[in-house]
Amino acid sequence: MPEIGVSFRSAAPRFTRPGHKTPALIRRYDNCLADCPHTWQHMRASYFVYILASGRNGTLYVGVTNDLVRRMSEHKGKLVPGFTRRYGVDKLVYFEEYASILEARARERAVKRWSRAWKLALIEKTNPQWRDLTDELAF
Image (cartoon, rainbow, N blue to C red; front, side, top):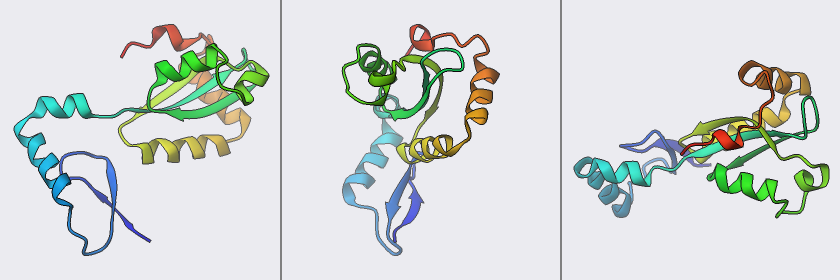
């Protein structure tokens, strides 16, 4: 099984084998980041773990995405068949941002395993009014 290593310039983990050298393309990319810091800002990816609800204390859904605005438009427009469309779960009540998809997916899996009471407490702590946060997204 591969070990998880850390990139030279980012906190994003990357899979490497013991004794495996960094590929030339990644070395060039990392060197470019040192010379062109503005490039890193444009290329940095964000990943989001989010919780949707059908209403206050209603049905909950935990998901992960790399584009929260697009994903929320899909949920609100009921464009994707599945759980959220079937149960009318389209109110964004909580989200977290991560720099790494590995971190975001690990957090999503953890939150999905939480009890309902823990999820409700997390939402209540940051969004006690259960406001729909979709309109407040500013990226």
